[in-house]
Amino acid sequence: MSVAAPLELRIGDRLRLRKEHPCGSREWEVVRLGADIGLVCGNCEHRILMDRLDVERRFTGYLGRGAEASG
Image 1 (cartoon, helix red, strand yellow):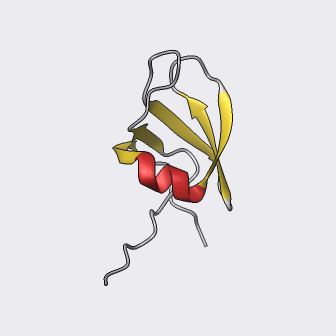
Image 2: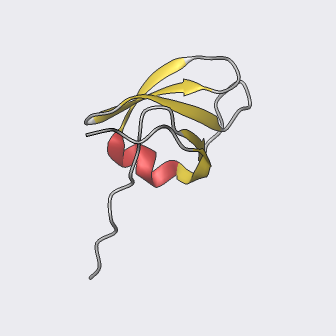
């Protein structure tokens, strides 16, 4: 049994998710990281919190990457 690596997310990443938002967009921007991921719709700018596991299940690809954390 293999375990998939967790999705590497950064603030500012633009994602495409499988399920459409009611406005018709599938594009989201990451604005908060933690156990819950804060997302903003790329079309209507509606803000949501989604469980990290749900984001990983619905993720289909990156549209753009945010800046890497300096450390």
